[in-house]
Length: 162
Image 1 (cartoon, rainbow, N blue to C red):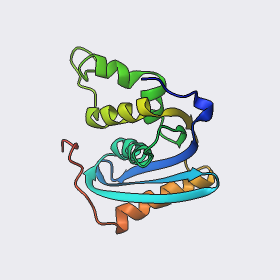
Image 2: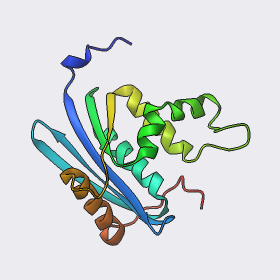
Image 3: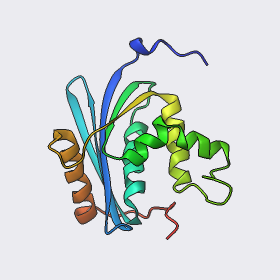
């Protein structure tokens, strides 16, 4: 499939955060999508999950909102998510049948598989931001995730093994 040059693609910023209280426990995530100064927010809570699953879901749900191939800058405070993509861990796990090594299964393979599909569809770059450090959008996403844990209609995280 031939793709247009990345410069001609629309550009969107995606800010994300997720967490669980306790971990594992009730979880939530929030994200903000911004394009040309217009932003929309989303939050969702889950009955039983982990902080890493919520961090992954924040990015997955955010990217899934974008229908056309787009350049996306993702901002996350999760080294787990960023390193999983940028350091090639997730692609490596996938190539080994979702195994980390000969004995250990890769955690959250269901979500990594979904994220890799979305990253392959778009032109995605990840940037780490320090959490709880005054980054305006990260703080807002954290507040959305916290709200989702406490106030939203909780869904079941079908992929959580617990």
